[in-house]
Image (cartoon, rainbow, N blue to C red):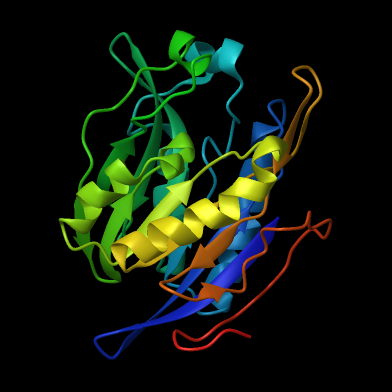
Length: 256
């Protein structure tokens, strides 16, 4: 796992934000939940108030199994997240495979520090292969919270300025993007994330998974990062980070 931590100043308030990078493992959901709990506790101890987890953080995007592992919201995974948010006083954003009627979505949920689900976002943009297993969402909005005006996107959405522009029109302050990046995107992702932050004059928090899906021969990139316009804040995005965890800290007006 990696944590990238930023201290954001907005209207004289300070919000410490973390992107938690998890090792993807489709067959170890219980272990991932345990490790997530440990790192959320660590985030709270470090003074974080807003934490972003990867897309489908507990199950991975195992396409052939998506309908089998999908769950309703609220459900077991959101129950766990609500408990963690309340226990540690955190606002949480996390990716979950959601089942709703006959549809399956890659959904990001937003939970406040009272442990309440205050919003969710269903990924709008899908790869051609994903369209056989997932349904696209059709709504993109900003949520007013105690840590700022938050907008959610997910995964492939980062490639499309149109979706973040919808958030800009709603005066977004922080865009959070749970994702599972593949190694093929190593060169592009840093520039895409910086572009989305620059275009919309806001922070972008991207939390990705790391690890290998041996059956599908997929390598997950990791490289979670937090950026602001126009300066990149300690981006762990150009080289593979082999360490289990990395802590970085930056002020709003400087890069270290």
